[in-house]
Length: 556
Image (cartoon, rainbow, N blue to C red; front, top):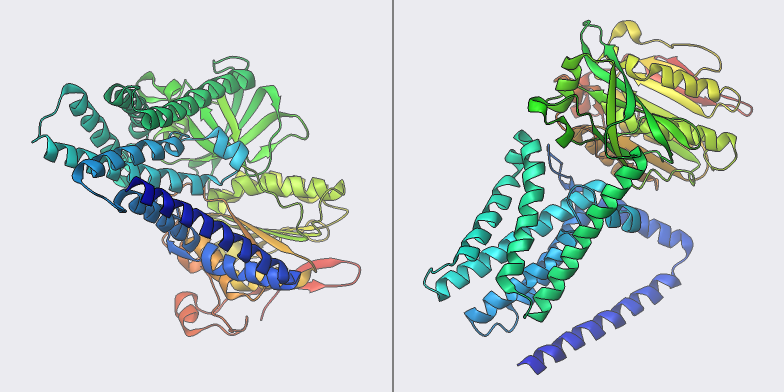
């Protein structure tokens, strides 16, 4: 039986190798244009199309993600059930598959250095994979426990009972409602329970069983190495493990007179090299309930940084619940912080001729630094970008104060080359006017944001390739995906799904942007769009001239 199984595995591996070689050779026969067309079609139908939108504490599930998940689940089922002779073999296989799957699982759920620095997998994709690895491991463990209980008539020793308790606690605390309501409890308990689990498994199997021992050794080694590297990195970045980075806090008041957002300028003890789209974990011991501030580490995008070797970074924080709420209520303007990071692969937008940055609310954070780096790269002639547009859909009129000075700095820096244009979509009729004329191209617009029109207009305005970087709540991101699917152009989407999910926008947010139906003209709205938002007051029209590009607001 073992020989037959080995032969079957060899046949499948050999067939897969030959099939991959044939597909690769056929792929090379296509022209570059045909290959680009195929890749664009695959991106629109598999990557940009979602099976399920992300909720608070979860990740968006695209058809590409679903395909890989189904293949992974199918591989585990085949390995578990093919040629199964007895219940004893089922118990042994489920246990072996559990320890094999624990290797990628123990790469870490918070931030994996290997995944982040080597594989460079986006954070949301890695979170999705980590959760499904955990679910598969939990299912395999449940099968192993059920079969073992059946074979032993329900008899358990102390180690087995402890293992079942730890596994059950991990599964319970990992449920989405628990992660939503008790994030801090989940984060701390999940780490300690994971350590207890791998320790109990070592006691349960011992070192006599070669395959489980090797897999557990690899998983344990990966986890220990990552923790040691993380501690070393924190100590190096902060010149110690204490919170000594001086932090200046500025509270941004909105039109109601109440502060809901904060700007933190952190003076770093050691210079960092930060790329746009990266984030850091912030710990402020002075802010926390029951004196537990040192145990809280919350991720935030870096919104601004100084040139070259960074001596200070700026974080934009919107008040939610928990840590951000405590920080707002503290009203302290000078604090000490411990910073961990930077993490994330960064936005690689230098190779695109046209770049469109689209944000909603506090999602403007990572795009500010992206615009800054692109403007500087254009001036230094190290990037291809010739057209850069930033679209910011504000949640409230007062939210503009959070980043308006940064936007003015960008436009002043770009006063000569004039590649940057900024659109602020506000929900206030009195603000539907240009902020300034001439070289400062910053406009407030009081109208519905037509995603399709904006994307197609930017695509037609400049020759070459184009990329879109988006950061906003699920509905905002989903609308951009829809608009990209409906366009005939090959446009790359970079989605920054790290924006807070508990969105504090008004109920009218969904009415402030729309996706034009396929084939509809910009001036003619579909019946569904007309019912949703009515006729727009104005349209932004971009006029291209030979020597200059200018933006005007006209009625259509």
